[in-house]
Length: 194
Image (tube, rainbow, N blue to C red):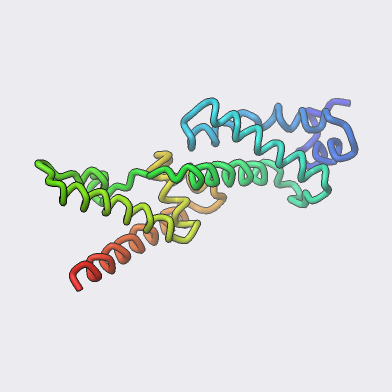
C-alpha cells in the first residue's frame, strides 16, 4: 500500500483504523512546514521542537478519541493547534513584546531618560508595567497580532497565514490594537492629571 498517493483525509482514516503508517506519512508530509511556523515565532530550536511535539501529542489524542472533524483540513488544523500552543507559551512567560510607534521607534526605548533621577526611574518602570498590563487587556485576536508582529517579528503575510485570516484582517487587528492602546494610555494620563 503506497500511502504517498493518499490525501491527508485518507491518511487520517488509515491512522484512526489502527495503522500507525498513516500518521507517519502525515508527519513526513507536513513536519517541516509546521516546525518552521513554530520556529519563526519562538526563534529557539529546542523550544520549537518541544512545542511541535506537544502539538502532535494533541493531534494524536484528538484523533484517538474520535473528536477530529476537520474534514479535508488536516494541515490548517494542526497549524492552529501549534499556533495556540505558541500563544499559550508567550502568555505563560508574560514576555514583553517590542512595540513600535508609527516612525519605527521602540515605545519602551522612547521611555528612556538620560540622567535619570530615582523618580524618573520609578515613573519609567511604572509606565513599562502599565503598558504590559494594557497589552494583556486587549482582545485575544489583537494581542496575538501585536505579539506576533512585534515580538516574533513576523510579516503581516506570515501572521495572516498562521492565524488563517486575510492580510487585511491581520492589519485591521493591528490597527485596532494600537488604537486601543492609545485610548488606554490617554485614559491613564487623564487619571494622573485628574
